[in-house]
Amino acid sequence: MDSSITSIYAQSGWILLTVLLILVLMSITTWIIALMRCVSLWRAKRDNRIALQDFISSSDLKEARSRLTGNPSPIALLTCRTLEAQKRYQDSHSLAAALPFNQYLVSQIRHNMEQILRHYDAGLTILASISSSAPFIGLFGTVWGIYHALINIGHSGQMSIAAVAGPIGEALVSTAIGLFAAIPALLFYNALVRGKKNLARDLDGFAHDLHAQLLNDKD
Image 1 (tube, rainbow, N blue to C red):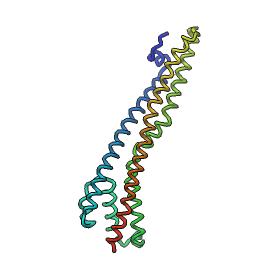
Image 2: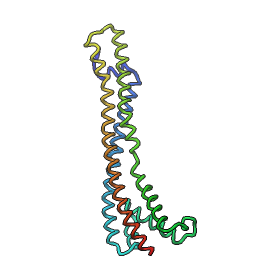
Image 3: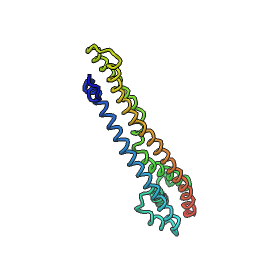
Image 4: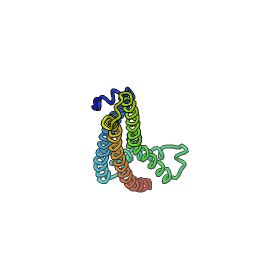
């Protein structure tokens, strides 16, 4: 019996081939998402440093808004959106304007922070799903491959250890590929979650300073 990997997939039919294709696509998806998210976090941290320097060096909030317009960093977006909310509060007679300015400002900053940080959740659910499901998909492929290998061995009448070990060993490749897809997805997921938490802490610290600046500007 041919002991090559292609033979066990050919003997096991389209199901095992589908499993292999799914795992390969999962692995490719993991690396694409991870690279895109890592670049996104790196750019956010780089642009945050520029935005913070521009904010600190501005003489007033109007100049800060002018200098931060066009900067895609979380700090710049939070500043511009919060300043827009401040202007709406001052010019509006809506129900929101009936709130105390401090309470309104806190709610707007929190809302803007959630909206900005939500952008960095993209892809995390997919990575978590791949890391948790890929090993089981690979295990399913292995079980299916072993089942067909044993059926073929039974039909051929070759029940020696050599006849059994080869096909079963080849079927275990499916589990190995599942782990190959799952482990990087798990590592990237943990790293990206940690990166987002660090970004959120930086943004939260800036939000307190922005809140104080707006209150002083109101006074």
